[in-house]
Image (cartoon, rainbow over all chains, first blue to last red):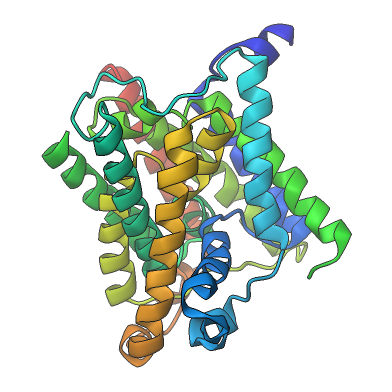
Length: 170
Length: 178
C-alpha cells in the first residue's frame, strides 16, 4: 500500500478503472458526469466584463452559463489540489515554465515560443470545447460511456485534429 | 450559488480526479503530446478503460433507477468542427481542459499563465461568436442523443460488443509493444 501511495506512476488500466468508478460515484452522489470545460466558459464572462463592461452578462451564452460558483468549478479547483497532493507524495512536484520534453521544438523550448503555443493552443481549446459542447473528460469519458452520439464524434474529432496538428508542428 | 454541501461534493470529486490524473501520468506534457504523436498510448489506455468500466456501471445503475443519464446533445457541425479545433489546440498547448488543472497542481507555470488565459479567452470568443451566430450554430441538432435510441435497440446490445472490442484493442496495443 505504501508503495502504491509513493510510487511515481500507476498502471493506466488501474487509473482508467478508478476514473470509471469515480464516474459512478459522481452520478450517484452529485447527479453529474465528470467534466471541466464549462467552468472556463463561466469564468470567461468575468474576464470579458473587464474589457467590455457588464453588458456581456446579457449575452445569450452567459444567460445559459452564468458566472456563478458551482459544482464543476469546485471540481476543477479540486483537480489542482488532488494533482498537487499526488505530485508532492511521489516527489514529482516542480515549478517549470518550459516542459522537459523529448519532442523539442521552438514552440516548447523557448520562452516566447512556449507563451505563444500555450496561449494560442488555449484559445483553440477553449473555443473548440464550447463549440463541440465538451472536452476530453465531459465528452471523451463521461459522454462516450453514456453512448452519446455527439460525444463519440467529438472524441474522434479531438484525436484526428490533435494527431494531425502534432505531426505537423512537432 | 449552490449549497455548501454541493460545492464540497464537487471539490472532493475533483481532488480524487486530480490525484488519479497526476498518478496516471496524464498531467505531463510529454505523455499528452506523446499520445498525439502516436508514441505513447497512456491517454488512450486510460480513456478506453474508463469508458468500459464507466459504461457498464452507469447502465447497470440506470437499469435499477438509481441514477439518471445526462447524455449531451449535439450536431455534426458543432462536434466535427469544434472537435477538430479542440484537437489542434490540444496539440499546441499540450494539455486539455481537465489535465491543465492537474498540470497547474504539479507546478507547470506554462499551464497556469498562458495556457489558462488562452482557454478563458477562447471560451469568451465563443460566447461572442454565439451571440451573433447562435441560429446557425444551433441548427440541425441530432434528433436523439444516444446510440441505443438511434438504433432502437437495448443498450446492452451495444455495451457488451463495444466492451469486448475495446478490451481486444487494448490487448493488441500491448502485444505490439505499446
